Image 1: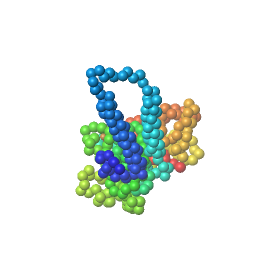
Image 2: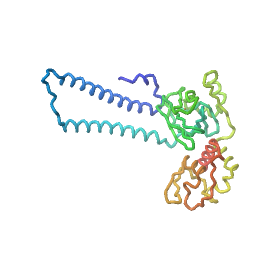
Image 3: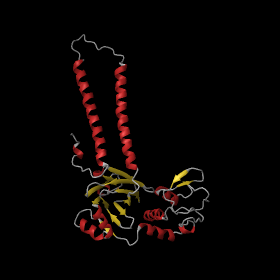
Image 4: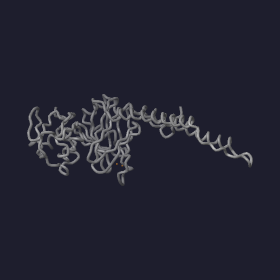
Length: 330
Ligand code: CUA
């Protein structure tokens, strides 16, 4: 089977990759067949209807509605098939499985910071288990970046001030290159990272050991100098500390059934809230972040507009930690 040269050497390292490739091949073949048909017809008509004698006159053709409609309907069918196929794939890409392992990614000029639930932070290296769905919760500290893993056929922008998500299930152990695919300044072209896929038992061991020694050993001597910093506290615990330091607990209870000035945060993540104007919102990462930065924008029904903005007060890391803490309250 004919495969495009540019990806003939690219491994299919995620559950999504073969599906993307099949659609890609389909579009490629349709395009190729259309190209040959159009150019072929063109060449045929040039010879078939060329002027043979001086008196040859081109007939005046007003139209052929059967042929025209057939072409229009045929093309529409092909385009709609591509659209429907792409739509089905897109829905699969944006909806992660519920049991996915969550990892935070913070893009900044010009590196990738990876943070795990247990507080471990890696730079330019993402370690994941094979055969398990992984959800990346991503944001940027400065400008737009884009997390691009060709082996997984996945790419997603990181947007400052908001969270974007990307999920995948790696099917091949080993290292996979990550590129930044959004021009982000001088060192954009050097903004590399590696996704390191471990066998599940190897991953469990890596997590248990704290990772530091192993990461140092596997990346030592290679260019791109990934390194890891092991933090004593996990992300939700860090969030609990920020919650106390910034005085959040004055207005928000974290125990079940207790309500202070603002809504209780117990079990709030993933729930649907009714807002002051009667509309509904699902409490997700972006809603929590927005509520910290622009608290009056989407007020929960029945609560006064008293919360101050925390824009400029909290760093991206602190917002990530607070979100992790709120998630842990259940
Ligand atoms: Cu980050 Cu380009």
